[in-house]
Image (cartoon, rainbow, N blue to C red; front, side, top):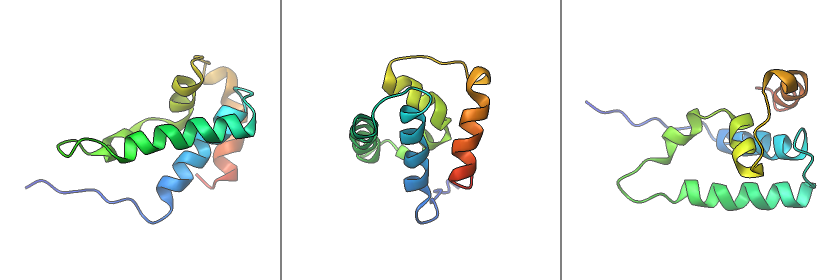
Length: 92
């Protein structure tokens, strides 16, 4: 029997807040640009074709999603302290 996973209220918002903060730091994008990229991509993810669930997407690490959106791959280990601080600020 297939079971559907449901995110707790606000957790998707938290996920995207982490992505946005990763775009701002360490990618150094302006806050408005980071917000624009995040909101645009979230709209695509949240409105997938009817036969595809967007919930599988949320298994991706927010740091990696930010790298994809920025078009710049950064090494997580080189940015670990900054990323951990972002996660801590969002209580992840």
